[in-house]
Length: 481
Image (cartoon, rainbow, N blue to C red; front, side):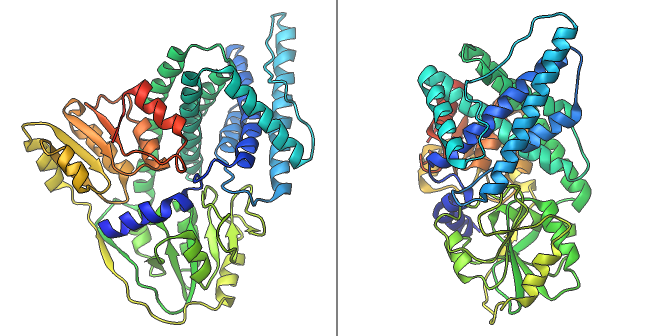
């Protein structure tokens, strides 16, 4: 198990996360979208103060915030349609806000950054995004820049979780509002750093609650987590490779092909599915394909690749294959589908070459019996370190005076929440031994949970924006090791 996750995390994670490089094109386009969403958030907050609440608008804006572009090859037409929709929404809510203020004979504020680009040209949008970024970095202190990066990461990851919850007809409108309230404070460059820090800590509690609700709905829908195993054997026959972390979409596909002779393989983003009874029952779900290196999968997989809505795969350096996706802004040349049109994907699998030989792999136990770990924590008379990820000799040496409880399973969020609920956090330090977006997301959700110390493995600048780790270290006392 350790060898597999070491391989996945160290050798392939950068390519899979979609955040390997600071690409100026993607940064500029992200800035354009965020510029509109920040303004919409401002008007949502102002309208609530006037007594107007539009749940549909809040949900739409939060879901738009969850959309990502993971590489430079994307469908330009779909991006322009997406941007135009957000821009039109901004104009409508701004007009509604000013109208209501005039009707009530009260003064009103209009937020703008002076980059109201209405072109239908991608190149011009990129230039506008560059202007926004230049304005951002030249008018703010380093402290505020790093705090705003934490805010944007917190809001975006929370929006993804809220979108996932919506798949199960669960809507927390109070959380939608809090995401927009968090984003809104970045509109005013005069906001004090202390307010940013306070709001991030407040939102940390909300992130924790959102994750708790998501974990609960997964167990309610797919059954209580249980011991299982992950197989790396490749079977002869037609097959589909799935990536992106959306268990709802994976289940939907498995349910539709349960009577077909099509094998399904996944990468690390989908490993959580293997611990729920409702997934384990599907004989089509085979396990992990290859080493989950993007280039290797796209070069060697003999069937269609299915990337779910929030997939972060960066395909800039990968050979393009037979790609189907539910992403709102799909990869260029990928076939865009939705959950109701996966029949197109299934037909592609049936017509594909398929795997022509059996390749024996390993069966890796996924153990969820935490009794021994819990007993170790309960019986400890000294300092306790809970580690999420593998422990190397460097960590063992550094924390040789601690009682160490290790969780190496692909279920970081659930174990983190269980520890937080069941034990006195003042007696426990936490270490995330692999720096990833998922680890950072979980780390931010426990900033206000009273842990003795929080440690994070040093992050490569190519993987994580250095402003984020710098903020965690300087503003929230997270220790980098």
